Length: 410
Image: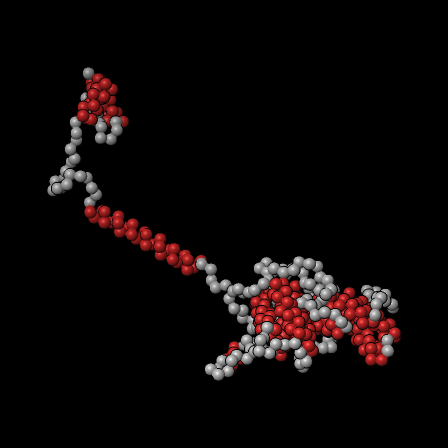
């Protein structure tokens, strides 16, 4: 009897433990059939809500203090997440855009070119005092070259103002000129060819002042070519308009430094041979010429021979087995003027290519030599081009686009 009672108690405890919440088996009921009858009876009888003492609403709900605490916690979490977002944006958001040195040089040079392009257009289309046809032709070429140079520099600049100062404004479009002319009685002064000449000269000087700044040697070469082109354009326009030719910012006749950096010296051998060969060929042409033409050829030949020697000394090639100079060179066909033009254009191309690898300290001297050769080529009948010394290769800065043709001779 004792064992049966114990088994009954254990069975009852098991059924209570395994039954779903709220549906504990009635004491003493252990069979599954009895359990089903009990569940059916409970399901048929509605259960009224339990109301605690002092409660008017029998619907179960959380105490008001608990609900208020939960609402406060939710609002605090929401405010913290919003504040955290604000702090995150303030800390991790991008700061003001800062231009690199190369971008500064590009932006300032583009600004100069855009200014002279617009100035040339104003002077060419002036209705009050239209220039002569030859002057209009030169002004149109200034516009065309500036447009090509802007494209090679990456196109019109759109961004924060550069800290590298552009060339000072000149002509009727400059703020100072416009302010002086904007009176109730005086109309704005028309842009004259002289204003364009002055702006070209200012652009050349400004570009030469930036040569040592770029980290990209290819950009330095392009800036040197722009400076040379501005110098040549100023001279051509001044002559067409019968104006005084402005002095170049280049040191002319160009001088060869006594020493070069190692990165520059590696490419000097080709310059040594080119200068010495040009001197030899012009000596032969001078022997065939007469009068002033002969004197000019003799002077230029001596200059090239001297530069070849100076470059050989600076590169440490003079008197060594690596000295590229020879006793004789091939003589090109054509007239003396045509031969001289091709020689000078070839030298301009060599100096432009040397700028591609030149150390910053050597860039100004090489740019002067480039300008010297380009001037001589134009004086011998060559055209003024946007890129004296040949079209530059594509710039290496990712944000820019430019010509992709190989260097040549213009």
